Length: 395
Ligand SMILES: Cc1cc2nc3c(=O)[nH]c(=O)nc-3n(C[C@H](O)[C@H](O)[C@H](O)COP(=O)(O)O)c2cc1C
Ligand SMILES: [Fe+2]
Ligand SMILES: [Fe+2]
Image 1 (cartoon, rainbow, N blue to C red):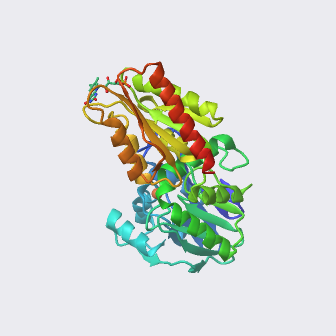
Image 2: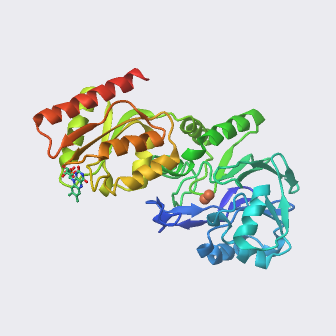
Image 3: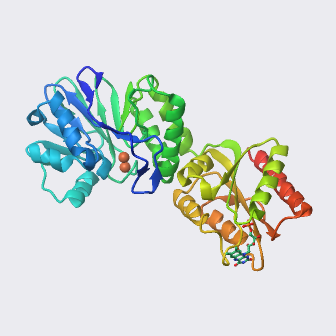
């Protein structure tokens, strides 16, 4: 598929993908592994695809180019979703130069244990393809230490690998030819679940790009769609997400065995509603964990509920907390609630975990013994009103 004259998308759409990174990340809309071919006096290939698609990739590639004529293969990132087809490709063209960042060489050597013809590049290094040039920009931690961007002069295309991408299979490929509402939902989920821990680096990289004053007409990431109509949109969104901007909204995430904690959650929702703040209830046991992460990422407040279960919290709540601790969200406010029978550890365990996740616990959590009565439910409403009022004060 042609992007501009001499630049082609030669990637693979993975329509059936429902889990990525093993089972760590749900991908309801599939994904794609984007690879780009640039034909100038010299020929360069930017990134490959995941290994199960290596054969499909090579046969597609052969339809647009004689493999032997590829001079440079640029590996922006060593993770297997982009480097998996390298062994099959390099076996066919062992003389080609494999262009990598310093950490890229390390990561490819440790993944594939091959002595390929590596050329290490750093930020600002250039490779001339004839009329056009490739310019490299290291982008450590977007997504791994080895990650880099490749910029194509003349056409002003930024091939940003994992940054600015999303797990989304499409036949439209471009931002003006797809359902952008869906795409943006996948983009925020991708950022929330994958890039949040590296938000500082995201902001720094965008500021660096702006300072470099390089014109960017097209952003071509390694997953999902290509931004050609409005590349500024995703840069702007990343800048805001990277700085921890969120919406005036509260997520109530909870689980329950006999509905006591659920009843508390409903009363809490009523209290928040009374304060006029947008609020969403997410029962953790039946909601996709990565979707919950995306919801929490976009909201300012998180109220977390669990009954006490074997002197601890419910096992359905624990993985969510584990995930949130690793992601280190910024500027979040939280509090905890839950029902118990005798020992009642859950709420304090939730609070401890919220704090460990860097979430500011605004007020003492609310404990209810067994099923809540009317008075307990009114306490839940008050708890919620206080939380919402404090949140409003903080904006
Ligand atoms: C399997 C099981 C284990 C429990 N373990 C504890 C416990 O260790 N300490 C405690 O205070 N309550 C414990 N409880 C009591 C629950 O916390 C109590 O029934 C609570 O009201 C349940 O809230 P829920 O309806 O939201 O699930 C346990 C209940 C069950 C069913
Ligand atoms: Fe990656
Ligand atoms: Fe990737």
